[in-house]
Amino acid sequence: MDYLLTFQNTHYAIHSENKLTEAKIPISVMALPETIGEFCGICLKVNEAYLVASRSCLTRAEIPVEAIFAITYIGNERKYQLWSP
Image (cartoon, one colour):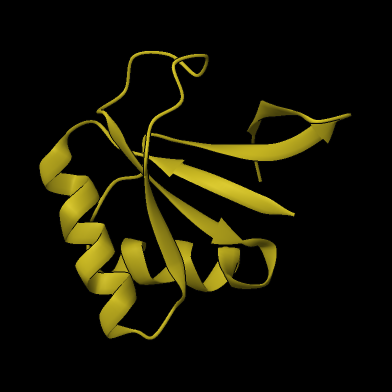
């Protein structure tokens, strides 16, 4: 399963991308899906295997994650469900 990390603004998203890349955590930068809501226009996709490490890395860097969404599929349609630890 994959997750989307969303941020308050583009600065946090780009800074997060840099920190996670430095930590060798594989991520994908993508445009925020319209169905999610009004966060900044960029989000990071991370695999479930790296979710805990990603959150820890960003916490240590003092970068706030606005929300985390689990990506699920119903048929060919991608759905996003707000995730909470």
